[in-house]
Length: 205
Image (cartoon, rainbow, N blue to C red; front, side, top):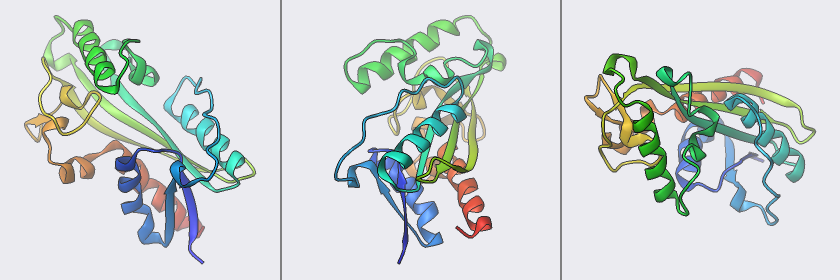
């Protein structure tokens, strides 16, 4: 029987990306929407991406009785001492819809970087990933990053969040201007998932 791993998300794009990397190992990857009874969300009060990924993985693994992978990700800007970091999704603290929150977050980020020279606007998307067993034991933890520079204004429509602001120097465009296949190849989540696949393969589980 194919082993199932639960991915702690209801985002179909995230699920597809992780499935493409883990299913060749003979694993079946299902999202939270495959569960008949969805557990309550945990309080993500960790001060690092790794801590929040661990909180989610342990919570959903113990609540569902399934081996579970969870991730936490966000934008780290060097000139802002790592902000918005773990607060990336709620950086501006406003907006009723995802589009409104994204716009408010991007506006706040650009205001915070006003007057800062391009060479000091280095940044990266970071994704931490954690695999936990139903008994709450952490099996593996990985991390991936996607490097770039914060642009002066948003460009592109392929993506969400801070994608329109992360300029990728060697590609000559922002993350939101990359085609989906190239974006997935460079993705911080893809990097973390590929590292997780290596950990699972090495452990034989």
